[in-house]
Image (tube, rainbow, N blue to C red; front, side, top):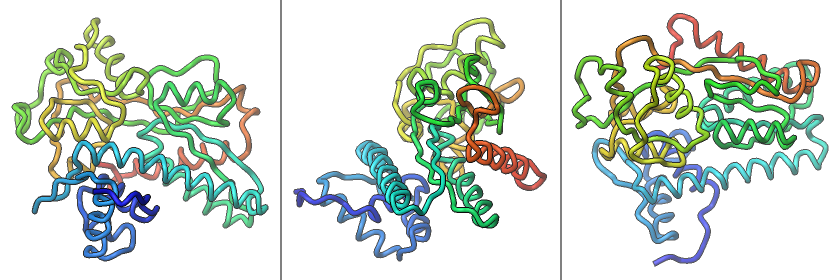
Length: 318
């Protein structure tokens, strides 16, 4: 039975952290609470909502389908709360500049937080008031449209196709990886033929997703034909990861997005024949380079510098 109350923001942050890390103890450390307190708060959220949100096992904590959905909604609530905090700081005159950034899901979840921390650190070190940043998250097509329509100053997309009517520059690159559940027949085998992977109906994101577009474009480039139609289409990378872990099929994901699940053993990365599938991460804005706001140029510089640092020997991702 639900008690009709709304979970507090701290509990929502904890819930999202558990879904991302696959561990209550890791999420507790990340959010600054004890493991016992974290477990208590999560069960309180389940009672409040009247839903079972997690499968708990000695090997880790995995979200149920309801847990994935609630975590996605919680992300929206937390983003709205962050925008509220930013807006109130702006009203108090604590921010000298504002920047609205649209980003695809991989960028907004895995890269932008690092970039924004570095941007703020650089501005504080220079004795300037940090820029107030509003983040709008969606797929790559959504991010393009937000810039084109004037609702965002800057966008970051992860698509192999870059629009010609917007200013653009590549800031990083991202590898796509084929992932399966540990019990899948492809798990633990040698490389799967690229042609075989292309013919497999995958668990995929919706049309407009940069990940899906990059994979389908690469299949056409290498094989001269379309990839197989998806077996299942889901709206978020988290939902795709959960479906694959539950044995629904294989998927192609950003290696960054899949890294935590691979590390925790919930997913296995499967090599395919041929060169890796790599797509650019691109910054977009209206007009030419001179039309970029100063904060936008600074954020792009931070993104490029971060990519260079992570590309150094010994600093690579999973």
